[in-house]
Image 1 (cartoon, rainbow, N blue to C red):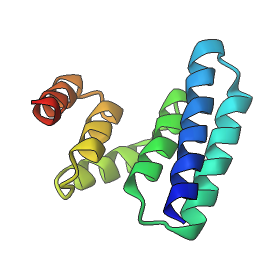
Image 2 (image 1 turned 60 degrees about the horizontal axis):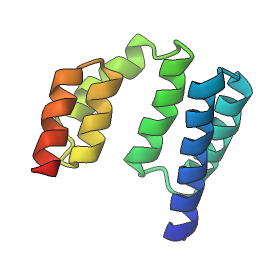
Image 3 (image 1 turned 135 degrees about the vertical axis):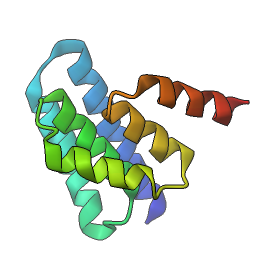
Image 4 (image 1 turned 180 degrees about the vertical axis):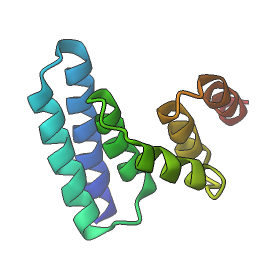
Length: 105
């Protein structure tokens, strides 16, 4: 159910955060496993895909195909949180900051 998926997503985000602190790639492997299991049940959850792409970016595996997909999605998405994540993945930090300001304001 939705609560279980979001709890698992938060767990995966905690593993990603732990990786950021100590650089142990096994933590990203665990996060990736959790996120992919979530997608097995519902592959339409864009924020889960964004989190998987965050892992790829940390491992320098965000290839041109993914970047092109992100550019296409950027023009199709109406969700500001997802749009912010896309901009961060594309290193468009100023755009992400504008979206965050818009969400907070």
